[in-house]
Image 1 (spheres, rainbow, N blue to C red):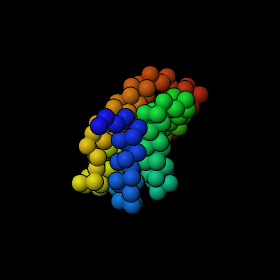
Image 2 (tube, rainbow, N blue to C red):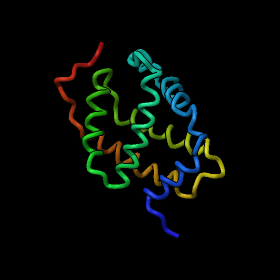
Image 3 (cartoon, helix red, strand yellow):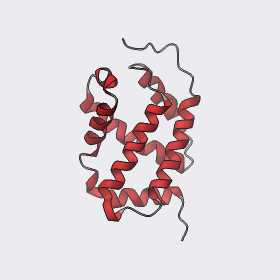
Length: 143
């Protein structure tokens, strides 16, 4: 039976269920371990990690569902992040890959077939959108 990306992604979140607990901290810590040069730009990592994780999931689900607000959300992500550092499309791709991998690993055998590919298609589309956003010159980079 064919499932849309949205259906697969929603099924995977249901499979993840309470195994989501603690995932945001794990993801953020892993991202910083892999990109230590970004550690100083997150002044309050405890606040950032849950928000980053949830907004990532929401944006990917919204994109899969054709939601109108996704383009605006991506532009806002870029503007917000440019307040801290010049994150690259590759940085976003690395973050999205961590999110997808952590969900799959935590869900274990309950992870639906095809779910990782569905999430990755949306991640790839988001990275492509990130790459097209022009830096808002009115938002200074914090040094």
